[in-house]
Image (cartoon, rainbow, N blue to C red; front, side, top):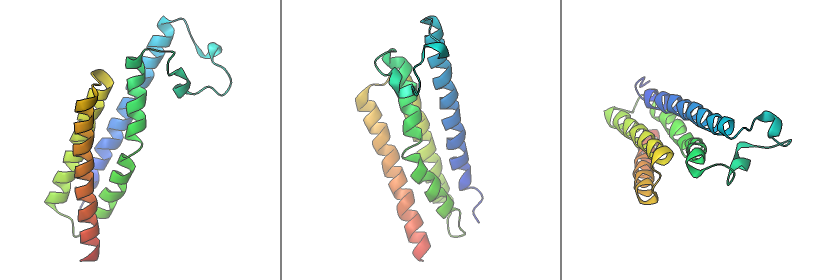
Length: 142
C-alpha cells in the first residue's frame, strides 16, 4: 500500500473543517452584530436560508464549504484507489496539486471571489482530478 497517497486526502479533509469553522465564525459574528440569534430563527431554518439576508462576503464561506463537500468526494475515492500498491510519486504529486488548487480556490472564493479566477482554479483542479482518476483506472487494469 502506498501510505503517502492518503495524506493529501487527509489534508483536504482538515482544510474542509477549517473552512467550516471560518464559515461559522463569520456567520455568527455577523448575526451578533445584527442583533440576531437562535431565538430569531424560524423552525427548520437552514444556513442557506440566510442567502440574501446577510452580505455576500459572509455567504462566500458557506458556498465554498458546500463546494468542498461536492467534487472532492471523488478525490477521496480516487486517493483510496491510488493507495493500492501500483501507485507512485506521480500520483502523490497529482494528489498534492489537487489539494493546493482546492485550498487556493477556497481562499479566493472566501475573500476576493471574482469569477474568472475562480473558474480557472476550478478548471485546473478538475483537470488534476481527471488525471488522478485516469491514473487510478489505468493502475487498476494493469
